[in-house]
Length: 85
Image 1 (cartoon, rainbow, N blue to C red):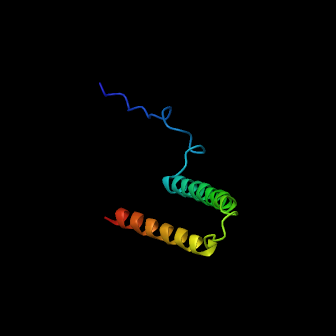
Image 2: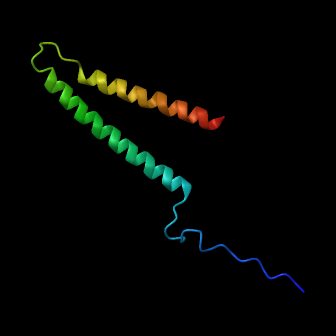
Image 3: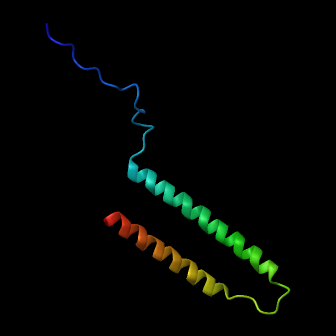
């Protein structure tokens, strides 16, 4: 007697139309995180500028934006370096 053919486990997998490739998931996650980060940055900047209106010396907004972009660059370089190991 021959053994019966193995059954495919299609019931436990998501349908092809609902599953997302891993690179697509990473892209959407990164896009969502960038959206949240940039929105929070604008709200925090607006709030902190309102808090400083009574003071004569306010911080330079351009410097804050440059520092934010530098931080993002360093973070991306660090993540890329960690992934290449």
